[in-house]
Every structure is written in structure tokens, then in C-alpha cells.
Amino acid sequence: MKFAQDLPHEGYVITSYDSNSICINGKTFSSSLIVTAAQLETDWEIAAIESLQANHIDQLLSFNPELIIIGTGNSLVFPAVEVYSAIIKHGIGIEFMDTGAACRTYNILMGEGRDVVAGLIQNS
Image (tube, rainbow, N blue to C red; front, side, top):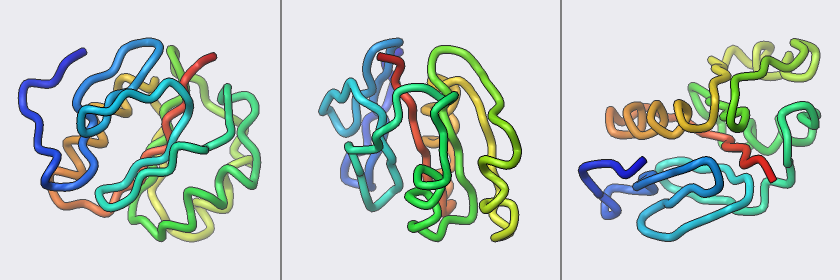
């Protein structure tokens, strides 16, 4: 899906996505990544939501966001609460959604100036 408005000068914006890639500020990525308004990490080493572990959660928490969005791939899958309980213990909001919905939601929240981090899983 291509978004209508590209605003790369305002931070890291997801400009398009499909089932195999995510385009951020015009650059295409085909692996899982973490994105915030100010930072982009393209080495989030997770290929499927079923592999989500504490070290993946720690990477997201390192940004100290008010909200974390995890895109679970091509379909919505909820991991066991034990896997992400550290987020809840920190009082940070957490949402799981398919990666396409996570891309759209991240752009909206980031555009509103919210302190959001998105962990976006790309199915391999």
C-alpha cells in the first residue's frame, strides 16, 4: 500500500508497505525492523512472532516509549503474555496487530507527536 503523503523531513515515516517489504522515507527494507520518529534499526533479528523473546522486548524498551506497537507479520498473532510482561510492568502501552495495520497506526501516532516505537516483523 502506498501512502498519499510522504513527509521524510519530519522523522522516519513509513511511505509504503506490502507483504514482503516496508518502505521508510523512500528506502525499502525486507527484514524485520524497529522504527521510531528519530531512529531506525534494521537489525531486529526476529522472523516470526512465535520467536518473540525477552531480548526482542528489551530492544523495544530501550527507546523508553509511551507506546509499543508490534506488527506480527501477515496476520495478527498474540504471543503469550509472559513474553511481553516486562512492557506491562514498565507501564508502557502495548498493541499487537498485523504488520500492515502496525505501519498505518505507527504513522498516525508518530504524526500526532506521540512517543511510539514500532517493532515490525517481516515474514521471511
